[in-house]
Image (cartoon, rainbow, N blue to C red; front, side, top):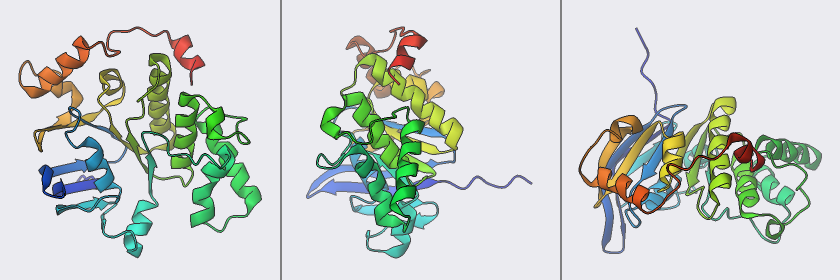
Length: 267
């Protein structure tokens, strides 16, 4: 008998609102180990709101979020804290602290959540930077890095506690096509080498095509589609088909052929 797959993250009948404005309601999503799940939809549909609810930054109006079987409550709740330690987050703007060096930024979670000595923290930071192909920048400040380098530094920080689950909010935002494609390849490589599950919020069609196993499509306050990306692309009408067509017509990176050697240079 085959054992059932236990979800890494599970959203059940989730509703979110800001004051009296309902963002979405009745959202249920189940994310299994090793998958890359992409949450997508038009601007303002609630993609980032859903991600923030999943990492405990926003309180649901109704419903629940579970990470590793633990229901996420207030961040002062010990069980919630332990569950959230297993989830790294790459924020859209990187959220690096400008007054700290890259080494200090990446080492901060280790200082906060472990009792490791400074020497070992420095070694771990260097190792994590190597994982995201960003070596030799430990002493620099965020303002001294390019946009793509800042994203990778923030990714290293998100991975520094070796979380089995990684959330990424618009990781390609503000990046040129080659750098964005390189970041997509990096996420795929990290999934393969680290055995992690990844949840990505994006509207970039090229990224979706490159990395998505399954997608969750938000539309008009509800979950319109939840399943394999390959099945979603077979649809020939409806809001999701229109979304993909609009992304193509607006000149997103779909269809651009970026040579592998050029992408590798931007990793």
